[in-house]
Image (cartoon, rainbow, N blue to C red):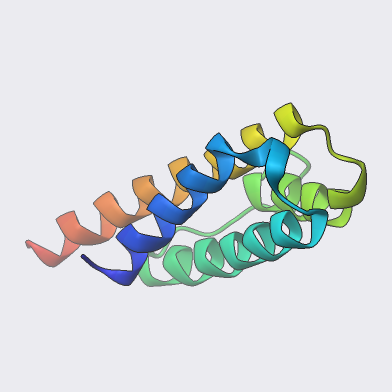
Length: 98
C-alpha cells in the first residue's frame, strides 16, 4: 500500500471517529492534507486558486478552527481532504501510465 493510500485510509478512519478525536489531531490531519494536496497539485500541474472556493483554503480554515469544529464539521473536512487526495492520486497514476 502506498503512503498516499495509507494517508487516505487514515483520514477516512479519523472521519469515522471524529467525535472521539482531540482538536489537535484534527488540526494535524488537516494541515497534513493541505501540504499533501499542494504537493500533489504541483506534480500534476493543477494549480490551486487564491479565491474563496479553493478546497485548500477551506481545509486551512477548518484546521485553524479545529477547537471549535463540531464532530460533523470535522468529519466533513476530513472526508473532503480524503476525496481530493484520492482524486489527485488517480490523476497522477493515469499520467504515469502515459
